[in-house]
Length: 77
Image 1: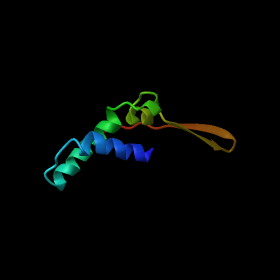
Image 2: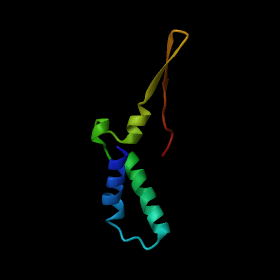
Image 3: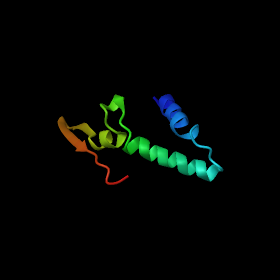
């Protein structure tokens, strides 16, 4: 899965732009990662963005034979 992320980053961001310097590259990659996580739907996540999928995340914890469900929500991006 990580290999696909790097491939997408290269083909959708790095190879499409002729960055003048490292600072421009850093800014471009940061913007692309923000787009990738918040606006680009992923087929592996049921056409949700990682941000949407993470906000629906629930973790079930068993403590003393009692199931506790914790929900996590991001406040901002």
